[in-house]
Length: 165
Image 1 (cartoon, rainbow, N blue to C red):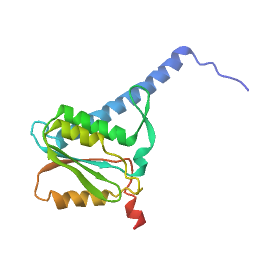
Image 2: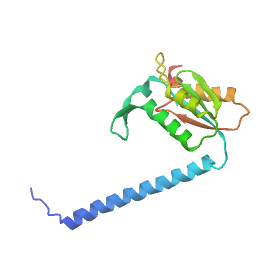
Image 3: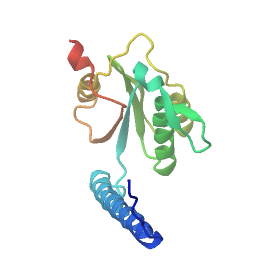
Image 4: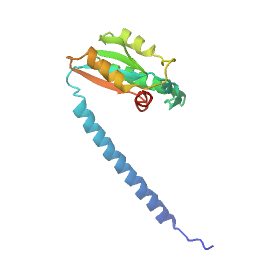
């Protein structure tokens, strides 16, 4: 078997080209996400934000590495995202959880201590393994039918309740 000689210059250029291609792809995706974010979240306008967190059993999976290289659950990541958003934008927030059924655990409040303690106390629904996104959104419609609000739903998967009914 005859091996071909690859000069270091060509080897480097090919990896540089690949790296640049992916850098531009990620930059493009980042710009698209940024534009969508700006159009979705009018950050100059104070608006009520409803957080809907998935508390199904799959959220207990420890497959997320934190900044300190410690494994954390998907639910812990979701809770830290909610709390970091509060730190940036402190207008009124509410929290709803869902597994098979949705439950409003904190109505709209601007009290940081109550919001923080309630969010930190969220735990997975141990008696239920389904992810019923439809139930969560239907509950939002029933509770806040005529309210202008921003809804942020954090989940790790598909709506599995659709397949079990």
